[in-house]
Length: 513
Image (cartoon, rainbow, N blue to C red; front, side):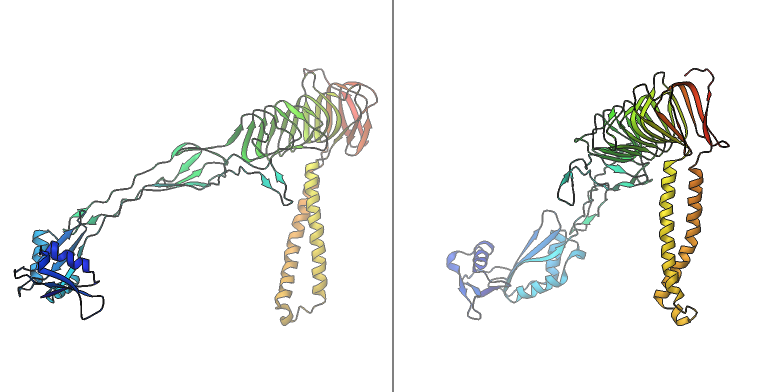
């Protein structure tokens, strides 16, 4: 008799089946090429022994699959029945009938009964468990840019980089995805295979961070910079630089308070809400929307570097500095040859002196000493706010531009018959009409704002109070009225007389400075 193998032909499989499955000696079988089809082989059996059909079932170690191999009987007419195989799988191998692939099994039995060896048929497959995913923590803030800035001309600005991570108030900074429980599987016997749950991870908050109830979103409580160590996070409203601002720190920009324990070297920029410098500021640019405190002092070069604050500025001393304060400038020791803009200036230490330079002050200068015996010219201008006037001038420029645009539009419209519905509905004409209407609405608002700023920029009662001595060489201007100090004057107050339009002075009462 002859036996064929179903599927791909492999004479070695036939030889293996003869020796290892049927246990035939070499003289009782031969593997021969088939005469029916090139490349096919047959197993020619010479034995007189009777061998019943053989069923081999291979169940995977994880009980997730079962494969069946069938070998036809030798010298027997016995056929394998479907129910016999089902009984074998369910009783002997404990396979759930629900998991058996009936179609694949029946097709394999049919080939078997036609005299074919059928091997490795997948007749049963379980469902593997889906293991749970671990919790994931995603950091949503940008990493600090530690590379110097490449300029358009190809040069490199080595000051423009940062080692710090800055965030805004209520900014989403961390997103935590909780662990997944996974999905249970089921083996071929119908038993549940429990899925392994994912491992949880938590975010440890020290300060400046809040989260939702589910602990899946973490946001900053305020503008600040991030301190991150492992899974521990903080947002601090103050950025403290221990040491100098130099090539190691780069320029600093921060929506919060920056404190420098050292000096600020020449050429660097600090931009923040509030700035505190313990040391010296050289020819650097400091800009604060609120206040600036420079505990030691400012030592610069005229027309290089600047100190600007929307609010108050306090300095230990200033030399050749350019300072602009929206509020009060307070000087502890001295101020030499500096350009000052401020709402008011106080310099009331026992030996505090302001000498040289130009001071533009809105309302009041209160100082111990003004000028000195050997100093050059010193100019003090009071009664106008340069900051408010600059704002007003910018609005004036916008008013002029708006008026010019309105004039051009109206000139074009005057040449058109806009009463004609066809002309008026033209998209370009309609755009001109809409622009003209918008300009007409905006222009009065800008003019009122300009007039309001100009009115606020003038102080009706500017004054200077000198607690000790004002020296010759000091020129005082109040509301464009000038007075040169030609001799030393002690303990004196200068005011503007609106009636006589002159600067008058009177002695001040004795009091402690």
